[in-house]
Image (cartoon, rainbow, N blue to C red; front, side, top):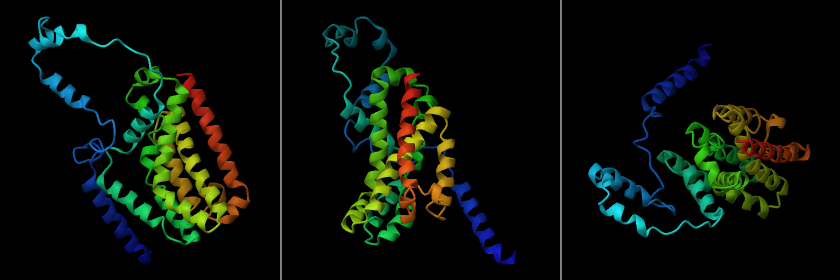
Length: 275
């Protein structure tokens, strides 16, 4: 027991630090990509100007805004703009994150250049793919939490919107770990490369299914952390979603995760169809 006292003191110190720095309910200090990424809304400024307008200017039929109603362009139907929706979903996924998150993503990208295949599989990739946990856990729950299903799902087909959201979530994981995939290809580690691709496809798919079916972020967050600790970190093969060991790929576990990703997407599509 005496040998465990340093660990207890360290845990207590971390707990006090977390308590002092906890700001879940205050997002005033968060940084945003709104001014950097495309489609950053100029409409926000317009909305702010409209809110600051006097009530008489809004309600008066002789106001300038009322007189310009006759010059509005007719509504045109251009269909579902997949590229625009994909970029918007990507921006929605990565914006308003703490500054340390962007720094950690940059460090993960740099760490993925390590030439050691074993180090990439067993340590770098599992740690790097923890970073999208918060944004992956929002998949399938964002519309339910903010009660915007009627507004979001009416704008396009449920499958097209699902594809845009899923691809944007997968793109985040790909962007963080892409150098690792290149290292695998250069070294001929095709088993590791296959497991890496399956992990990138399976994790967002499972998150989408759990979020859509449960309406809560907690289900995926809990399942992911348990799988991460037991699987890649401690060698429990059935939960080794990233193929940290070559034996995992050879045993068929990686292929099973690929099938699970397809099943999860199918379940999500079915649930979205019923919305």
